[in-house]
Length: 640
Image (tube, rainbow, N blue to C red; front, side):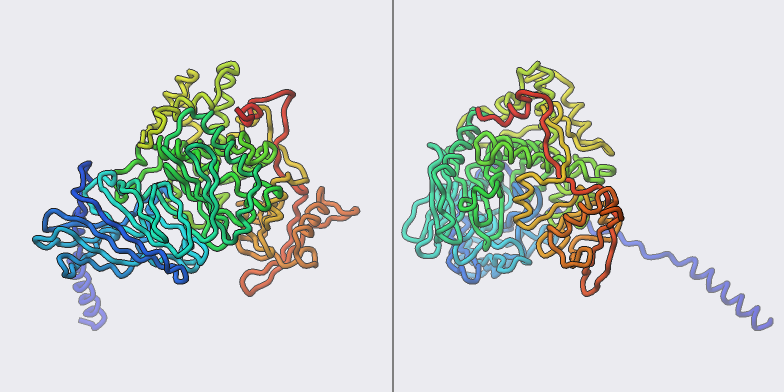
């Protein structure tokens, strides 16, 4: 046989043999449920928690915890994973360090669960009646590690970060008593009552669920104001000068409580503590709790009151959450412990309607003026109307964003969308308000829904869950209509403009002018130049692009987030210079000749020049009144 034919035959035989070999196809190892399911039964004994919060230079919390046990054998301890108000598994397990467990004077080995990294398994030795735990919570000391919660002047203690709890029980069934030592001379405030002995605060025994819902602000510079018989404003600041509130400032906060009471008719707390930090050292926050809220704003909250609304929408929003989100809560958001996943299907009510009432109450109380409120609402409506992402992603899907993106920045927000259930939820509820007024001949409004849905059981600070059907049924009790059909349409529709009908049916429409509103001017003064509706981008400090509209003029010039604008038409960049360039090319002419906007850009170490021939001039959104007299939006924003 010729050599070539022999080789071909050998190759054929080899191929036939290899064809008979089957790829290895393993079966997965089944996932075993090793963390006990939470049961609604009482935990036997009271956990003792002792926290040393004095290491303010290194931002370290040191923890001693004693957990009683009644029997030997397997036991699982959990760190909180799914955090209320975060709508996602945001527990900072990576910052827990140095965990040691002692039982009967001897160390007990722990093993982390391979599926749930927040779970620690141990074997309790025979005859042991308590476990003694020690560990540190190494809070962030740089911004890239997470939110800064401890500085030399103040701290924010969140109990879920400095405690473990036994698995197998509803957290409302686990008793705990906490003690904290703060730096000498500091004052601490919380929604959970305490007694003070020098720098040590002993907190009232409560359930683990309530402890987690009762964070602490503490600091060296502190002042308290009584806003009502049940509500206090506790303010901490980097410097004592920031505590210089005028009587009229505090009066506006007191009116906020008055207006909330007139709206709901019931308070779902025995006491409520605003915890407010005025700081550029500790990380900002806005987080709701049943009997308190964590609020962080930049310096100038009181001292620059007359310069604009700043972040004064924060406290009205978080206060509303005591009713909407804490007392009334989406049924699929309520969980028995902090290991059970939360489902966010109703965040368009939880956050969307809270956003709606936050803006309404800021105007009714005067914390923010009516005109500033109208200007802020115009910016919200215009922003959502300019999001091409509406073509592919319904607002109802954005309730998944806290889990999908963990609230990290996105590169193309206008296309990706980002938690739009907040502000588009506001627009939907404004539209509901206008429809209630129309359908009832002006006799009904969202005020009637608020009282019917939230205004029961004064003083009850339990949890009364709701479903989609409960929302639609309550709306029908206020004014009959196909509310379920309407809401479903708004939550699932694609390719439509933002729901701006609530403005137009309530006496206003969004228009665009070449002059920014007073509110937008304050934003510019703070360092944000919003050219979204002209060049299709917003520019932050030092010419850094902070957002780009998908398919807008800047997008077409290959500009993206963090591009730096170095020069405009051959001269160094300034906000006024780029606005003048846009104005000069309005209509495509400048003294008879075209003058497209030429930008020198810096991307990393490279430079490039682009030309944007946008001819529409500057465009800023504002609300224009339709007709005469008071419209529905005027009535909505008027104090009761």
